[in-house]
Image: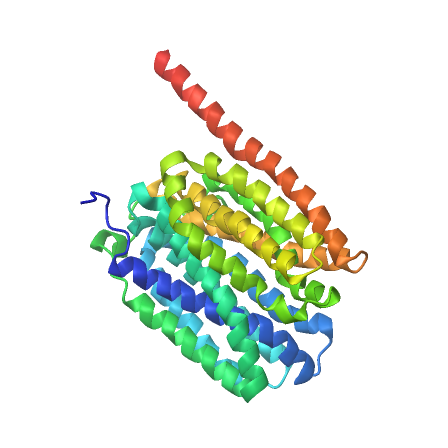
Length: 400
């Protein structure tokens, strides 16, 4: 009989389900709102893009504030407040007839999303047994990956078959699902009461410094991921693979699902370096294969390699961010990591759009592979070398 502490508790399942519904709502609206703005509101392409930009910016700005509030009010209070705001904002998508009206709703929805995902990350970090943190974070992030695959499919299919109104109603139901599953999470009394010794509010206390180095690595590599989110379906059409473009993130998620039981356990057993360096190389190889794809096999092979590479790196980096922080600072560490990561996604979407207008997608993805190799050096400098130096200093202090 195994003596390992239990991972799949009611709380872990509840918070993972709530996270799934949060991101499912996000992805349903992410892929449908720009086309709705273009076709129904008759906006320009740049105004349609604001539907995503405003949402992400409000989420990025709200996360540090939520992280600071987590220390004061407790994880459960922040989570429920955020989920109520997120669910309450969703029905308003049914009413506006102008772009400005939609942008106000996107602003409110983004605040709820940023706060809720920060609180969920903090809660899951506390309820996962420390000896299984890598494994647990991997499964938790898998709920995001599943939403990433299912959300665009549900959103686009609903829009095409039944129209925008039904799509909005489904997104409302899913947002309520996030609230209901979030309510099922029961935390110890001290968690609900918050940290009485939280520091006084200041700009400095909006970020957890120990999480910044690995967050910079994550944000740096997120720029490549944004190139996939934004343009992989367009690239597939360009190389006459429209018929398999929708399968790219399905293969990505299936590979993650198969590999997660192993990669998470290896992270706990052997540490982040043993996992991160091979995954960085796999990520780069996946981008090379994608750039040279001329058929369905190589296109989907690249999805598998990228899924195993980047799909493993993201929860690994988030685990590092949490482990480097004091227990009471885990919420702030989560907020810091996700804010910098989302900044990479937002900046990457803008930057990659400019680059894509000036070169072939295949060339852009090929260059991305070399960019990832720079990320290998960045990970070494900001994590591996820093950890080695810190351990050496610690040993020297013990000897002296």
